[in-house]
Image 1 (cartoon, rainbow, N blue to C red):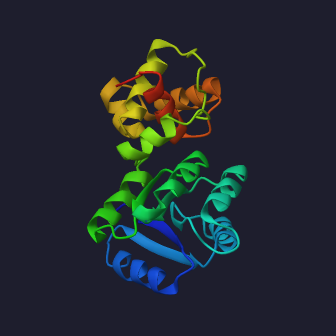
Image 2 (image 1 turned 45 degrees about the horizontal axis):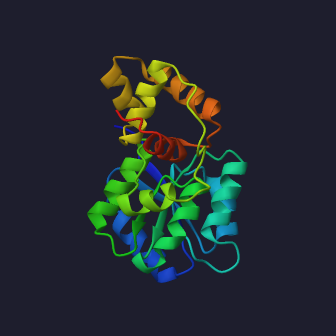
Length: 212
């Protein structure tokens, strides 16, 4: 049996954390390993507990979710961060994605959909809805805007599948490659295009018309 997905909850409202924990603890493949009440504590707990996925609120007193995300990326923490926000705070999603979030869900998300989102980002998917993708792509500061690709044909194929939300395993299956080879291609893509993560790679692919 596979190891459960280790999840860290970061939200300044205890009642929210309690509700999330209550639901997630009944999932056979998800384990809540800890909680934090603000961004700085979230970073410390992520370093201590090594979660696979962090559920992170954006708007918190002190260190907010975006700043916490940047710190985690600066420290090369491998945890996948799933932003939890409200529809009225949608504008906060864009800087969070730029800081390295793997996607976002709304606070009123259906519990089963939340569990599915956790599984999805853990598998390497990027959760990006059309309205937020549009906001990112209309921003003149979009990653690598205006820079032409310097990719091999195989790297472009991999990049197109990343933009489609495929995990490394799914890309390997689609292109009849080993997962290790796909990881190498992904690393080369990020290095060549000077991108931080798969989210930025997916945005770059959409902007430049690279599709799977």
